Length: 93
Image (cartoon, rainbow, N blue to C red; front, side, top):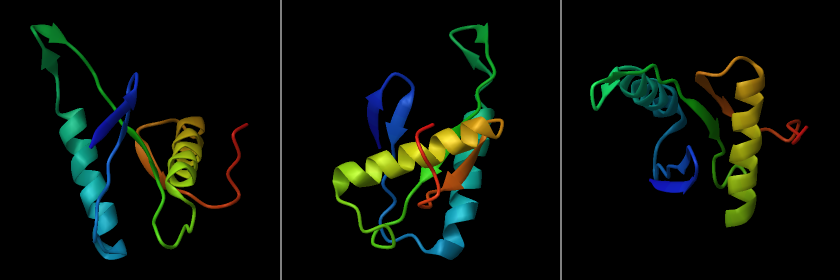
């Protein structure tokens, strides 16, 4: 896991199968949602994940990040708090 900036992070899950991806992402989202307090302040946190899979997506490293970002913004446009898989129909608009 690496912080890309602001509230954006990259997470690389090597050797994860497509069958395990949804369950893994659901568990991560639940852990994020379960954070209810930081330093005595009550908070509500949600997550928004954009996913791309290499080598299904044959882009280079920068391209993979761009594609994951496009998938994340597609999730945000649909109401946030979830995840979406990149496909070539996404755009930056």
